[in-house]
Length: 402
Image 1: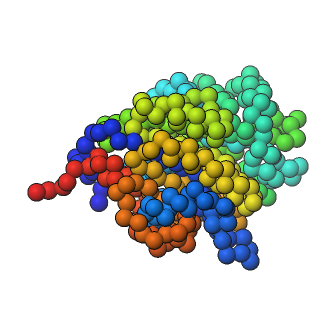
Image 2: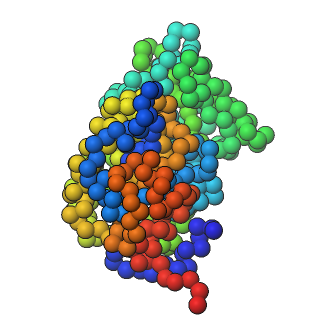
Image 3: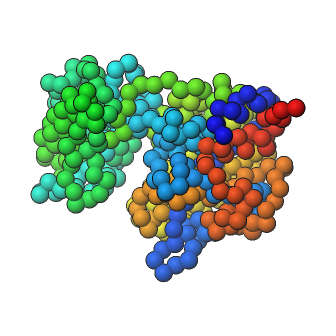
């Protein structure tokens, strides 16, 4: 079934839907263990939600496909992740409020560390402090001029992440990334994936070389890894598609960016999970769909830190009573993709999800975890259908047919 089909069934009402998204929630047991990070965590509040609701496993893109954050989030919001895939650079640009122009080429950048032999020893430069990132972006902005582009912009995102924009050229997003995604490898020289993209790849190679030269005195952040190439696109909004008044509550620019691309209002100035809950309460009467994004689960998974990922999940669990006190009509708890600490990165594993609503048919789950969700009443389905299930439980879809 096409995800656009449900648009013709939408009914507007004032019922509230909350999507609480722990980024990278899905996991794997440690070597020699039997429980994932979620199953290891003490989560009495999530367990109660699961026992009174309905659970399942969701695949962000497809069986065996490891998703990036962009397509995974489009699927969460009810958009086909294949049809609406977009490079992460555009998401970062939207989240930072960069003044985008047609023809601009946006790219996601990681400050990283090259060793003396020219191999990447740390893809995140020690999770660089945001203040240091800002200083380095200013240095690059002041010193780098390109022969292959009229303008280049360097913008701090957060920690080691940055946005780079090329303007004033006949650019294409059909080029290969420079990030090998592994340490112990050299930076990859970008290549055109189609003949007409060769000049863009040449611009990115020039950019990469000049960044390394400009940062040669830095011990930790002495290069940029570039990926997520994208140009500006317009997307149908969640208001037009589903009749919702949506609000995004997130701390990282990239996630605010994708929310803006699908028409969400974004709360600014948030730093902590506690800030996010305060923002939810403050805005609860103004909107009927709330996307709350928790980043730290993913970060600790990418760090390979099982114990710290468990602690983040437990922290989120402790805040569930404050969310439930608002009495949402539908509360969904899941992730955007799996980031097992065992793998220190995104994976293809299906995601545990729970849905709590008065209209649920309890499925016998006693706790919230991958094993319980495997036998849950929602079964296993593509993530793009989760929005339709949530809308149905909120009474926002009418009957189909006579």
